[in-house]
Amino acid sequence: MTAQAPSPAMQVSIEAARRRRARMAEEQRQSKMTRVLVTPEGAAIRLKLATAAERAGAFAIDVAIQWAIVIASLLGLSALSGPFGMGSGANIAFAFWLVFFFFVRNFYYIFFELGAKAATPGKRALGLRVASRDGGRLTANAVLARNFTRELEIGLPFQFMFMGQDQVTSWLALLGLVWSGVFLFFPVFNKDKMRIGDLIAGTWVIRAPKVTLMGDISHAAATAPRSASIAFTAEQADAYGIHELHVLEDVLRQSTPQIKSQVAERIRTKIGWIAAPGETDIAFLEAYYASLRRRLEQRMLLGQKKIDKYDTRT
Image (cartoon, rainbow, N blue to C red; front, side, top):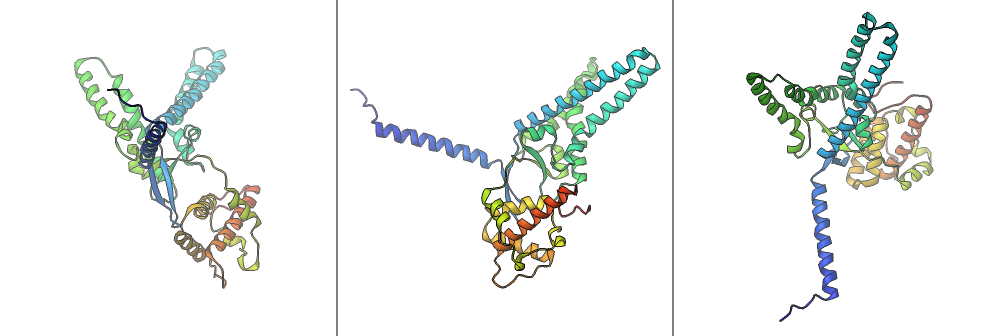
């Protein structure tokens, strides 16, 4: 007795079930890398953590850039010191190169992560950035803490690998290599994919793909009626910066009415705004978004970049 082949309708049903299971498995995998970050303004934002592979890729790009800089500088100094022979001039040039190599190795990451993008070129190439786990501003102390531990995590394992070859130093090198490997592979074995430096500094590395403002928000902000009841002074618009503008955009785009109400109340309190009769929270937020954006653009034209509400530069 031969088995009967499944009918076309049954085949379609089986294929649909397979695709549904695959989609659910992918959604479950993605959800494991998603975290909810509540900002000081009260907005809940869903963030996607960078995977260990993405972080390794960004690190490889940064290392390649560092070595390109170091090798180019070495070749440049060699060319400059060539006419002076192998005497004191070459020794001084080499000493300067060693100092330069030290600064590139230790301050490359700090320099870029302290910038407005909070990301090195390698991270930016893969759409990643560093963020504070408490939703606040990324501080210099956090950046310094997470980067000064990199020598412990990355540098020590390589130093242990090149220790002497006698029996005692070989055992010490093996033990040291195992100990350092705990730090080196720490991101692989924790759910947030954090380095030891991230754990100490209270930071995450998140995916931050480049996005443009949604058409309805940007258009509504640009064409919103500028009535006297929803007109802000320059001092009120200066209360916040670029970071808060992005947070407010996320609030307008995807938050609940309760969160919109909370954020509107926080902004009103900070800028001393008294709501007019009939003024809705969404109308207030859209009007303030438009005013804040115009003010920041005006400041940018004058070379006055306000990073966030803590930035007091004028």
